[in-house]
Every structure is written in structure tokens, then in C-alpha cells.
Length: 211
Image 1 (cartoon, one colour):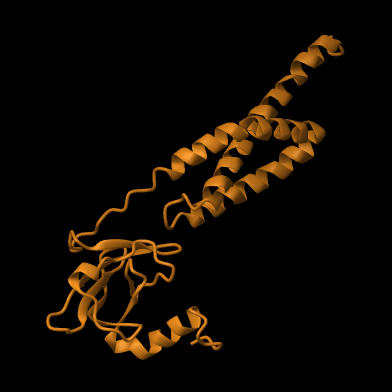
Image 2 (spheres, rainbow, N blue to C red):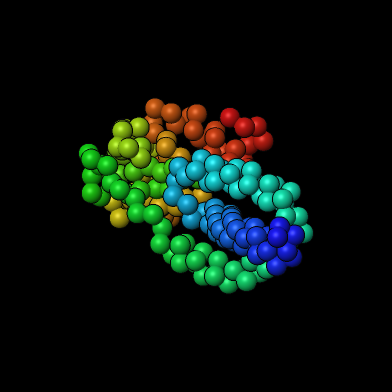
């Protein structure tokens, strides 16, 4: 009774089915997670969640490999190859819809959100009168005031006019203590001008020693 080959085949067939379902889920999730993270489509602050998911996948995959060996490898290769087109489509769709940034209470409507490598800041500048320095305010992502004072041009030139005060939203040198305009001019807070000027000099290759 228990040695009937057909019975064993029916019982044994459950295991490969479950394995394939598990592999399909893990492979698909792993492919999409890595692709989105590499393309920078994750909202700021999600790195910890991504790391936790990847850690879970890498804990699960060795178990499946140990349990089913060659079948798992073959199945994963088929799944990844067949899902590459879908993953690419999802990737392009997700990257086309960046996570909307919520303006915190207390941040003026004309403040611009500036993206950094991981987080971002809100910035607003007002032109001074009769050649006086511009006044800028910088808020953190939660609305806390980080800087509120007069800013001086890094290049030593005249203060920008009201028409030139267009803040770049994705500057090449982002930071919570500087303002980069769309015309590439950099503004630094007057209270820390010397310190931050040394940093920008080093960033631009004008100094060999980091500040």
C-alpha cells in the first residue's frame, strides 16, 4: 500500500510546487527591489527597509538551495529571464512617479524642496535691497529651522538679484548649510562663510586638503 509508486509521486509532487511558488515570489521581489534601489527610485529614508528585505531573502534562498538544489537554480534562472521584461516595465513606471514630498507645517509655500543623497531640505531666499546680501532660510524635512540668516556668494561677486534667485532642486553639491542656484552660483551663510568656502574649494578641486 505504502510502496505504490503512484502514491509517492502524488505526495512528492506537492514539494516542487511549493518550492516553485516560493522561488517565484522571492526572485521577483528580489529583482524588483534591487532594480528600484539601484535606480534611486526609493523614497528617502527607505534604505533600512530595503536592507531588511534583502536580508530576509538571503536567509531564505540558502534554505531552498539546500533543500532542492539543482531544481531551485534552474527554476530561478527561468523566472528571472522571463520576468526581466516585466521588471523593466515596472521599474520605468515606478521611476516616473517619484514619491510626493509633503510640505511640513510652517514652511512657506514658495520654499523649494532640495533633494540630497538620502534626505532633503526646504530652502527660500529673498533678495536684499541696494546691493545688500540675500536672506535665506533652510528647513529640515520635518519643518525645523536649520539656518535663518544672510547669505554671501561663494564666488565673491555681487549678491544675486531677485530674478536670479532660482534655487536648484537637485544641485551637484547639496547640503543643509548652502544654497545652490540654477545658474550654478553657490550662496553660503555669513556666519560660517570662511569654513564652508574651504569646503567648496576642496569640492571644486581648488584645494588638495579636505576642510
